[in-house]
Length: 106
Image 1 (cartoon, rainbow, N blue to C red):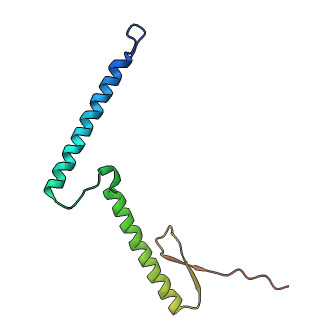
Image 2: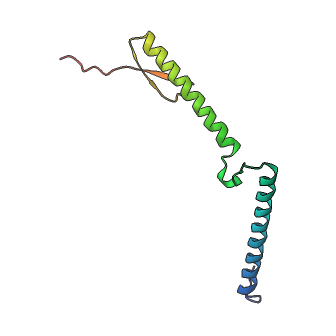
Image 3: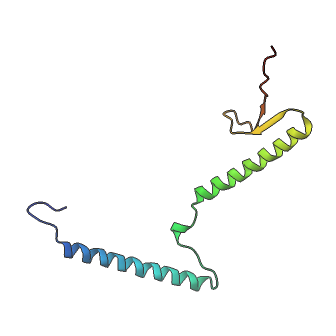
C-alpha cells in the first residue's frame, strides 16, 4: 500500500504487472502445448469456457425434470378430461390441474 511517506512508483507497478502477465501467458502456452501432445487432434478448451461440474449437473437435472413433466402431462391428457399445466410446485408435483373460471349465472 502506498502511504504519504512512500508514494507509489508507477513504473515499478507496471513492470510487475507485465512480468506477471508474461509468466501467465508462458504457463498457458506450455499447458496448451502439453495437452495437445497428450491427445493429438483434440483440443481442450480453457477452464473459463468449460461449464463447471455444478452447471452440467444442474442442466442434466433440468432436462430430466422436463422429460418427467412432459410424460406426466401426456399421461394426464390421455387419461383425463381435465386441464393440466407444468409448473414448479412446493410439494414436488410435476403437473398441476387447472380449474376454469366460470362466470356466475345471473
